[in-house]
Amino acid sequence: MKYLGLAYFTPEQFAAMAPDDVKKLVSQCPALDEKMRATGKVLVSASLGDLDGWRTLRPRKGKTHISDGPYTESKEVVGGLFIIEADTHDEALRIASMHPAATLGEEGGWAVELIPMDFYLAQ
Image (tube, rainbow, N blue to C red):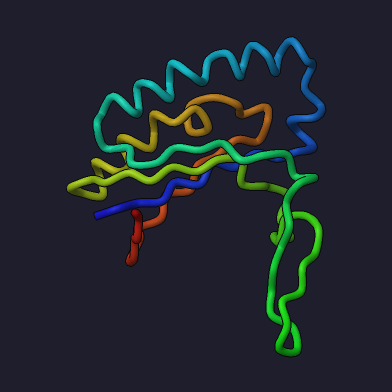
């Protein structure tokens, strides 16, 4: 079974952090990412770009309407994603718990949401 992991952050909380604290926090991420990849179960791992570059596309009156910014109305924003393939839900949880947003960054509002995937298409 494949699982989508969405790594969230809260922009206001992250922006309130001191620059040195952000550097310290972010410097810990590569080792945790590598630990997660070392399981051999990570198919995709990505960090998303600045919110200023986000666009939302939705159908409106037979045409595609494009608007600025994230679609969600929540305080948390998706900052990264990963896809893992695991034999059990418990294995997926164990692997997802290695992600930096599941172990660090409480002060930045980090969190991970793990979602079972019904469909997956890759080249």
